Image (cartoon, rainbow, N blue to C red):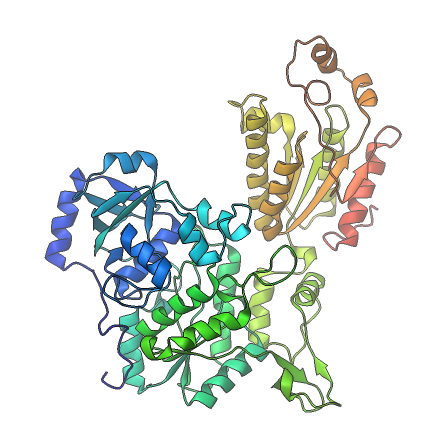
Length: 574
């Protein structure tokens, strides 16, 4: 162990209580208030509990936050770049007093830790935002994302760990700082390069990581940031399986894989410095992260929010104090005539390079075409295809929108029959009236309730799509914003096709067998779409159909043709 780099400031600060203390805390907790942590709070607490955020003993007071924002220093003088705070609701804040014990639980109610309340406050976060992001403009996407998960009351205090957060997935590669340090010591590793990533790695990234570690005389820790959502989506599992598949291609005992539960602040260079401290606590001497780490995101104008070199400069400016050196990420390209990867500055003038962009990878997966052998390993491609089958095997949602009487339900029913006739998928119809009866019977017709009804439809449709089925939705869905929400809900799970049944209102009204339009015109029915409530016609519909002079069969044919062009179905019916 003496050959490893020591934890930051000397020791792993791990407030995990002893067994007898845990029993005492559990017994006393029945009389203490509880707070169910948000995902980013669970991630912070996990690193506080396992020593990943040493030397922090708990959540910061306001004076500590101000010192960190102003000077990047804790009260004891330790370098620390970002606030680590616990925000709660107004009601919870009002129920607490200084000296109280607050039980910290996960989303399922499992007791994780106990916080002794040292301070309660409602701080002005503007100085904090300026320090982290260089702006407090609420329209900045970084600011809105940061504030969205913050509460009005901030609770500070030390924590006593009761039980580490539960992870049911990939437990064998969720190694704590202490576990990694023991592993490194057994392997005789003294210099360790942490490669922090959040995306799937292929041959170029593998070559870069291996080459960089060898140049440093170091071993490699692949340390992807994972796991902040309450229920991990399939992408999480697929990416981790890809990491596992990739590890077999490194030399024996050269590299190890461990997952890092680090909550991103999007704070650019300061966040990179935090990552350096966390990596040191895990036993690493060097780190390499990708260009978009720490919130290096694109601004609306297309420019990076942070200078990619700024993180490198800040971490290396404090290299002696933190003890971790940040090495630059270099773009690797495939040099065709030499059949190997090189950095872009090593390409000869007459060299021919090959690249595969992310959108090309997605297109190849959608079409069922193989990925280039030089680009990725067969084992990694296999895992990608498990997650992202070709479109003929993907689920999809067809979402009809239009006025009452436009013909949505008729076309949706006919489409359901045709898809069942084609076969290959389960097909579920979520018609507006049926959903209102069985899923949203308690809702009225205010905008709030209409939006909630559409969100429920979108959630069910996304689950059907994720399971490989076809969801056909036929509500009125008059508002553009909630339709876009549904698209965003479904899109990660599979295909989404918006069909605007653009039948004019006079035609819809002439067809009105139930007399709804007449009642709306007479004021009997309030908030009726097209009469007393607006309908926002979509500008992003994949298919537009006016049923004034089109039969249901012809309308279905238009939808099927689009599904065929996109590769979701193959049918002789069209």
